[in-house]
Image (cartoon, rainbow, N blue to C red; front, side, top):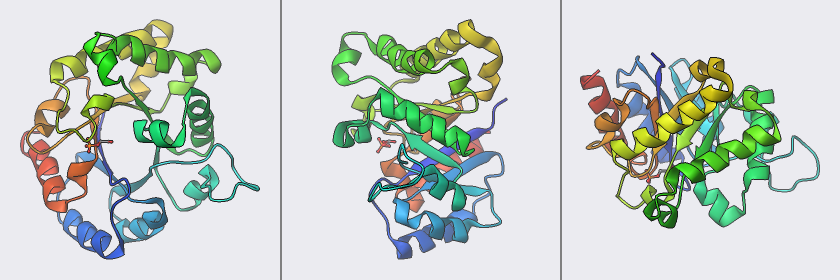
Length: 251
Ligand code: PGA
């Protein structure tokens, strides 16, 4: 069985004092069977790393540039992230697509760099509300994955995490049903294994979109769901603790 992973995506929230208190409480939890990774705003990644040293809590970057070094004012490179011991990098989050013009081309470039730097990419895919209503969820997710394969090759997906995050579920309080998530995840697994079934064992598929402690167990206990990408509910340690506990209790 693949080890479950939970990513706490704080987005643009948090500060040093909050992180200190948060990590202190988080460290008291027993979560040996789950990988937990914290994704604070980028300036706090190193600070978070220092506070979580000698634990199995890791850090995740919310973004990364398509360049490694040079005259790119304001950017953060894969080289930088490697240097500060970041384990995962979220690539192509729908908020970055919406507000920062991220597209298939930049997403692919970032995945290639992350893999070169041995940072595990968390590749976000998912449909918008219109596509969902028109029953086009599978088609949209397929196109997003297909682009990556066609513009590199199937191995691009090896040792990655695919985060299925329906855009309509992010920050809305309306999570997708496990039925819907399973439909998408099974399609993805089937689609990839038809091209190369050997890499399936090295790919995790996680779910994100209005995860909270009430729905976390039902979602994560599905056979083909290997973890959760939690936004809003991860910014409050008490809510996040409940998510972790809900999973542990039922493990
Ligand atoms: P949410 O965000 O849990 O607040 O819906 C999830 C995400 O954007 O990764």
